[in-house]
Length: 185
Image (tube, rainbow, N blue to C red):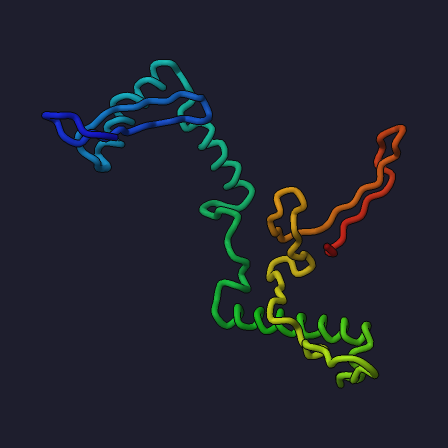
C-alpha cells in the first residue's frame, strides 16, 4: 500500500463479502498468511457472529446443492471419462480428425470438386489452392459437443463455441411463431 516513515512498508488486508455487501480492511507491517487469518479471526468472524449475519451460509448451501447434483467431491466441470487418459484421448482425437476429413470430402463432392475420392480438374481457370476433400489446417472440432461450431458473436466480435438460434415473432402479438437452432454461422 505504501511506506510510513519510522514504520516502513505498510500492507492492507481487505475482506469483501459480496453476498452481504460488508467489507473490512486492516493495515499491517508484514505480508503473510497470518495477516489474513488475523483479519478473519479478530474482526470478520466476531462481527458476523455478533450481528447474526449468515457468514459462509450461502457458500455451504451452494456446496450442498452441488453435492446433491454431481456427487460428493465432484465439481461438475471435470473432463469426460473418455478424455481423462492418454489412449482414449488419442482415440478421440483420431475420431475427430476422421470426422473432419469426412466433412471435407462431403463438401468437396457437393461442390463438384471430388468424384470417387479423386479430385476433379477444373475445365477452365486456375487450379484450386486447397486440395479437394482435405480439411483446412484451421479446421476444428469440439470433443464434448461435436455438433456445435465456432461462431462470431455479432455484438462483441468474439468467437464462441455454440449454435445459431433464430426466432420468428408475430409483430402484432409479440408471440414466437417459429424457432430453429442450427450449427451454421
